Image 1 (cartoon, rainbow, N blue to C red):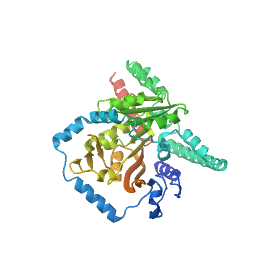
Image 2: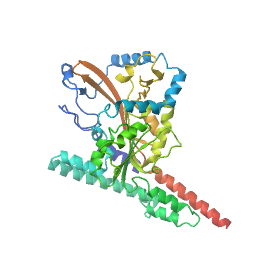
Image 3: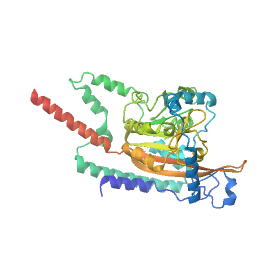
Image 4: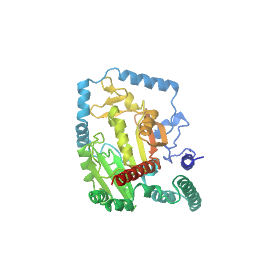
Length: 422
């Protein structure tokens, strides 16, 4: 069994879903475990997890989506919604400010990868008994040793005992120094200086939230990061009004966070940090706002920002969610893509679509789930079938290593060729 297969097996064993149980509170991941065992008790809670649809419910949902898609928005209007997308979202935040969405305090339950591993263990320890903590520490130590041993075996077999670690091989200060010492590259020192001076350059763990809105993910994350040395959070939105709301918040601190206006669909717009800088990218209810024809390009660009081993965490609307079925005729832009009354747009994904997009970007699936829940309005006695897609995709550890090796070989070949000519 090769290294990649064993590495995957380790990760799968570590990430096995905990046994589900019924509870009066929302317990552990993934996707909660408040199960509706007795339909008569449906109005006892606001949300029920892991709902299974009958074939009849599935067919009814498909029919409703087909019906509300019969009449499409006119092409001229569709073009306007695309060109003026940021304006519609600016108007949204001007109207609602930070009062529309609730803070996403569930983020750390579903996406513990947001935090550095050491911080994750600290938070887990706070919730465990001393005996559980001791057992977990032993398992964690054994797991890490196994991973290191497998990595060393693979490294020695393929690159020799003299090769450096993956992180050191990809980019380090020794490589930067070798560039500045090269007399043929007069501009190398200036380039390295620019790379080392970007916001958050001194951090060892960096997170980017794309489509930060008014900060409903930003501030729950910052609350934890402020006590986690070496971490830094970037957040961006193409609605300048949203970014201003984040920056004007009392909890915003430029020592821990950098908020900036950015259009992820604009290939010419640069990020304020180099590629392969980020440990985590958070993409929550934002890709659905982008035209389907442009989604793949966005994902491809984001994948380049991740370090090898970095994680992209995704959550968005799923096919046949209540929000999709509620649209009236005349709001459909294209298949499963709609425009709301305020001009903002939304797409409804399938699990396979998500997998295809991120796989084409060179990322590997860690998790890709359909999250079906029953949302309840207890006062009005209304039940709503909610569907979301939750996914975690990782940048392969060896991808950048192989690319770097090819680049190094190419550089050596070029140097040899130049020397032979001289």
